[in-house]
Image (cartoon, rainbow, N blue to C red; front, side, top):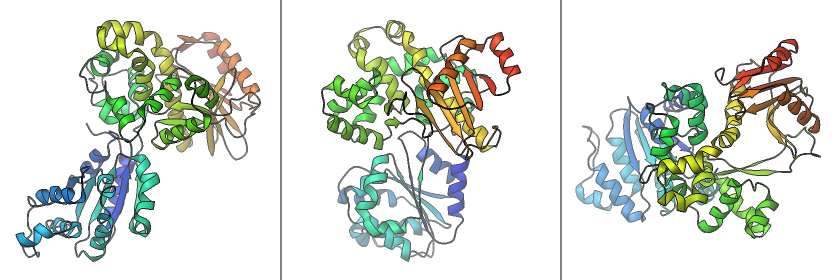
Length: 461
């Protein structure tokens, strides 16, 4: 089911409506919805779709030729003889694709990095085609390799990059999209799904909305042969070598070893080696590095910590990787009860912060906060953390604390929050407290008497 993406569809429509040909690069995590977006956008247009293979230039050309042979020929347009087609290159193939449409075609080349990596002639041919074609086209180059697009692509093609109209990084869908997707789930259940799968719709499609989240975990993540059981391994192995090193680091992160020195002591690898491999993971957006908020105190803060960014990867390494032998020989029900259920609330706690952050961002964009924030972040302290810090240009501050695990959040949590704020030397002009459970009557009374405190439960989200 296609959901969300109004902004992205508008972006594509804007460029489609421009005169002449346009070349757009759209990239993001595999499963985030790049192909679905392109297909929805081209639903009432002349779509010409090709998915590139990881093969030689000659084999790529032959594969594409076979598919082009099946396209219709428009009367009055010049066509090639069969003999000429057998010798044609990429530019000729593209010309034939353009000639097969009566209106402005949308040419989608999916996983285009598979052509660029093994063919030096493709981008020059595409550039020449766009310059010479009598038929204006919108060409979409799609890629699931974030690191390739952001690090390798432009250096490979050099000055030809000047012919690219725009790059668009497709983000994960938001929590509200998840709520709209799982219409039969409660807000809490949607939060649990979002915590497990993030905003990747291909993963959402593996879950069923007519059974509980717990049953979905058992049937669609833990059970032998299910689609998501091997997904985390596939993501790591996609374009990384030395998996033993990467899995060691990810295993350490899942155990809470989130500082460089912690990982050094845990793995025995040198700090320099760890930094290089973490950089590779960050380029692929599998790991993120979190620094304390700029204007907060650094005295009681952790200098910088690493966290897994892809949520299904975090679930795999926390619950499955370290218990892999048991996963193979233990009944799924028993494995869930013994190894997953006891740690799920702690797992959701970290991801609850992201949902609350999205909520505040939406309010900020719609100017529904006490001020318009111009910067945000978090403060990770040695004795406690501030989940979200937002400030405007006049240093007015909003601090947010998110609690998933406690069934009731009371004044003790407020006192702790104020103590952490003091350690960070951040004055809470506005203090927001989020809870997956409920708030005590005493805390509600305090919030009513003190306007700087705002309480938000999960149903409000």
